[in-house]
Amino acid sequence: MKKFLKKQVFALILICFMALAHTGITQAPPPPPAEKGTNSNKAPGGGAPVDGGLATALLMVTGFGGWKLFKSRRVRGA
Image (cartoon, rainbow, N blue to C red; front, side, top):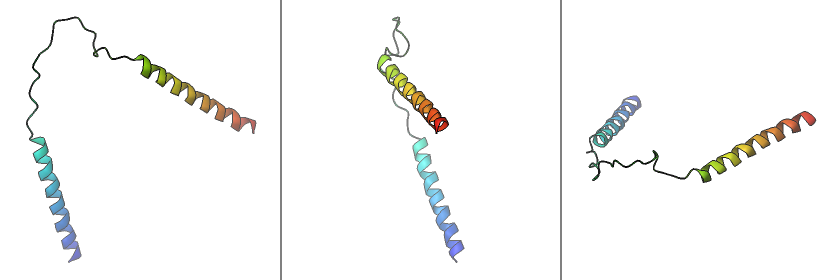
């Protein structure tokens, strides 16, 4: 009896998930933008600044490399 009930509950849950997924797939797409584009000569990427993120990434990589070097020398010296 318990095996039969487990199969029924599993089937019900599976059907519910499939029904919810179907409603999510059938949503209408968003409307197109008002302007289709311009003919101006702009750089790709929208001109977002890179310098702050680049400095942060370089500092993190340098710190990680220093930590790995410190750990490797500490183990050898002990």
